[in-house]
Length: 467
Image: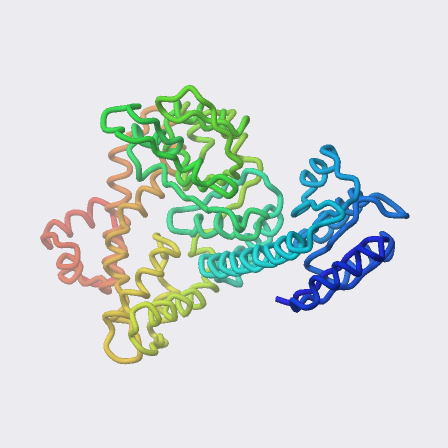
């Protein structure tokens, strides 16, 4: 760190004393007799400024405000021959590092200046550590598709504005990554980012996790405990799956969002916390409103700005890009050596529907990277058949939910018979097509008797080529 000092003082004797005291210690001292010339010199990047409180062309306190407003990293020590309580208090309130009176003790001056530079060095080191930590934690959202580029634009629009954000999208689309991107691109980037999944914590414990508790607040509360909101003070708290919050807790969260105050369990005292809230859900909150399971006032508090994440099947041009990103990450973490995807493997990735979205793709690539033999990941190394069979339940549920909304409004819709017969008919037709109409192969694939298959073909009037 360069040890350059700017002194703004019209008293030549004081300037001479400062130079005589500090230059032998390796400090370079530059002096200016007026505020006008001194403020111009500040632009040169001086780290430490000795500023007289009374100057021929203005007030040192006014100059202190200007310097702290424009050059927040600059350290200012006020000096004056007129020590008064009011001016001392005012200078410290405006951000002065210290305040010394004329005629000052030379040793006191040396100690104050050296301490200021030590503090600056510590602050610089802390900032470097924070920047390195933020860089290590800062999320990397990969993609070039129009839909993910829109998400990037949305993040850019809301990050610097300290408002509540709601992130929506299917499970596995990367909602927490987006929340982190908002945080690390905001003015709160050096503060904590605290995530809590409302669905993963039992409802009777979630309030305690959020707000903390006092000793004896409940059975087993042997010591007081700070909650997640208190831990996130000065930063951001990410509430995932907010649709799972019970109504009582919703009311308490709403109050905190309005007042930025909360009370730990077992306490009547109120604690203030400067926290930005980002919420996320993979469900339609309007459905929850209609059912009465989500408060309308809380919905509008959360839904100030909404960022919608597309499912992976709607951004297929990003699949290979993401796969390569996860592959490089897996190579580094698991020390597998260089790997690459074969053409057949890439084709399979592009054809697959990814019901588990980006999370499923990441897991598939990591598993393939670890279990594959050699430097090339082949189609057979990708666990997508298992993932596909395991996702039938999710697939059917998603399709049925859309269908049932219309069907349940009809009288005498015979819902059970209709759904079962349509699913069975579609399944039989697909398998017969895949086996070229060969009933023996189709029956074996379906795991049913050939006679049963024939009966079903007649029942559903399925047209087929050969038998």
